[in-house]
Length: 387
Image (cartoon, rainbow, N blue to C red; front, side, top):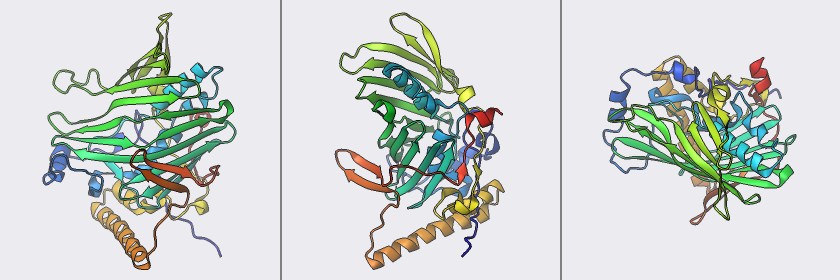
């Protein structure tokens, strides 16, 4: 039996220049956003808040998570295994962590992934697989492996957006792990919060503290993403990141970190006073290339770019009526599947991950397979991008 090819829509990634930010600017945005939250009380959890398609990016949250890894011009992840010492590798991990910060678009949000939705992409020898392992609450699992470089990523993401009257603050719970098997090093890292400011001056920015640590080397880093003062700063100090790298046991600082994540970030040796640039945003995330489909027949029905293809195409065409109907159809199908499982007494289980939850540790996801295989969707390697 010949399998039919899936309809899929791929859209440009969030980039420092160009991409979706240049293509999607809704008119009368502030008035429309205020009307959205007219009946929402301050302190409300917006996890299950449904946005009209006019406020959606034409892509799923799973894609945004994954694009932080596979959409990049300068391969900061591979640099993490190139260091000759644990300190050099740790510094590279800090730079890679900063490289995953992407400029969000004010007033637009990705689709909330449906239960069991997946996203599978390869870039070079790095293969990445995500699955929406819970819908209420929303939990996303990520597993990526690069067998050539002995790199493994295991993430469990649980966003909780809350409305605070004039702002929306999204906290990203869950654990991010980067494993460098060649050196027997395991890095754990946190994620900054996303702050959406509606009044008095609209804006959206990454804020808060991030800790990165490696128990094997005894090294840690603290990063602080600063928010802009809308009255006095006028954006002058926006996207500022400051921090330090230090030894866990003695708390002795080795390097100080300072810069802007959308420009350059420098590392200063506290002993010698020498500085070096460890991250250049223009080179890393400027004018990113959209992934392509290498094997259309290999796409799964659960793949994000397939699930949301009709909605995304309608948004790109600005056919809002068709977008609303397509989105409503997806949501109704999910409710119908939930009713069927309930009537049969079935409990849904993830296909690619084992999901656990505890009051002490929160949500945790373990991949069922040790290796992620090559995907039907391909992101260009840095060398191909430069060509």
